[in-house]
Length: 399
Ligand SMILES: Cc1ncc(COP(=O)(O)O)c(C=O)c1O
Image 1 (tube, rainbow, N blue to C red):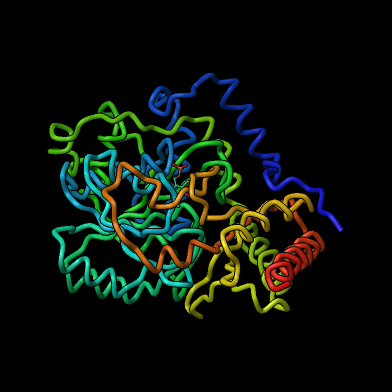
Image 2: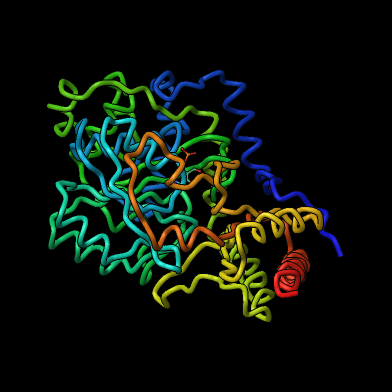
């Protein structure tokens, strides 16, 4: 049995997104601030829509989640030379954002369930001078957010959430992104909304939002936002904050708004598909799928699993054999960065750090995308193939 659908094909954009794009292109009003005399336009409307959907007071649309994180770090006062706490298991744009503002990532270990280890977080927050935690909800796995908030309160940490993989995920019914001072989201093609590239920054803090808007490059047109604070909050930022030019354009915003209207439905579908893959992996006890707390509602746009009995050679062979059967899995334990799966030992711009639990978890960790172009039957076939290939690989080890 082989599988023949591509893992990189995203769901089609809704028809109303194509119509909205056509309208924007016909108008030639592509810059978000260019058309204020003809109404606020698509970017401001997206900021309003997203703030309402997220349940945040303010929203700023930017060029990427990486840019949102950089603006967020600067907006809460991170300066060159500062240390910033973050998960040892995340994608390169997260330490990249910290380094881009001249700060240094202080990496925190993770658990077998792929979330930040709260004991290590507590210890490193106490022992270091880091006052900001850039918490990455990597691959949608939510740590106990009540405990994170308690640690942050006790140790006076400012939390910024990287929600690139958790747009629509909740902890005890509250959306991820609403726990920290700032939430950062991605609308890059493989995320939950697709504009090719793009990002959103949300907060309830008017001072933070005023600084972020000025730094995103508002050219003093900050009144033309859909979800911005009162003008008086800009009195100082307009003199103090440099322009980093990270604005979203009208075309991207136009295709995002119709997708946002359908996002809750997409989240339900992802979760159904992911549950089918997870169930299909259950018969093989050698495969370990991370556990989720009952309070967490993940978005199953990807699935992760570990096969702790595999050696590094088995992991390589498993990836190749799965690929031969049409199933694309990535391995986070490789010695060199491959595609998007680099690990912290390969980020030479970050000071060398030791994270034994992260090493153990990543050494046999696999990752697979679940695009919405798949259906339930596809997910059953994929799970069968993964079980068969894992079983074959294990049998060879034991013979
Ligand atoms: C965990 C995580 N955070 C942040 C980002 C950055 O998103 P963007 O590509 O929009 O900058 C990514 C991108 O893949 C990511 O995987």
